[in-house]
Length: 404
Image (cartoon, rainbow, N blue to C red; front, side):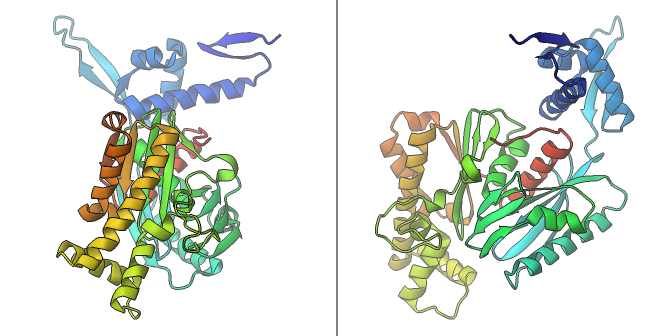
């Protein structure tokens, strides 16, 4: 039989370390500050279930650390002249650095507790060898740390493409970077005296969207779909970032849509990424227009511009790719029945690409589609940075494991 003991309004198993109870109380307190602040002590107690003495002790602790501040708001009872004291996070009291290691460039930013980007830096990737890219990443981080001077940087979040083991901090397999089993966290922490957490870039987009744009929502189901050079998705279930077995969830681009189709970089045939990604479309347009000498970004620019101007070959490529994307998203809706779908990436800015996506969703999920919020993300290339920053905040400040 297990004995349940109540301490300071919190229930825990007998034998559980009291330090863990205190840590859990602090985590809950900080979560409420991020989600609902400014908020009064009595409101924190009501929301959390923590007793007023526990809330008071935690508030005093965080005030002494400079993490929160208090101010009075008139309750409206002018006869008594009383003010309800509100607690609010001091948004620049703690900072995190978010980094995206992409295929073409490394982006990094300094993020505060409100999700504001205080500093942003980037560098192009010229060689994909891990040693070179990691050295560039370290230099970028050091530049930001130096620039923010005495401000408190408590952690670094890194988003990388491919299969990323967040627990071990290892990039297991990144076909686009041509990396396998790279001990990314260890290599970075060896050079930088700041704790590091690593995850997949598109999963972090979903986390950034849900944390800073959805205000730390505990939405039951959110799927962010990114379509650019490659394709991926991030999944939030019951407020948690879903990683799946072996951290392989979200490899949406490598779901097979056309058996016996084109060989994909992952080794399978007919993956969605070979049919609906920017890489697939630029490859088709390169062959069609004999553009062998142009790089990806230049071909994509021509493709989108010429399609908007009515060039039939360009329109056909975008429309067909959008149709395949629609089939893929329909499968996700059938599997997860999400509340919200967020579309992210340059391809979704093209109406020619997006129209068949929405048409297929409406045709295949008639009725249900009206209950699903489908919208484009309001953030472009900064979303991975924000998500990486959110992961660092939750891991190193709130001390909460946010993946499952």
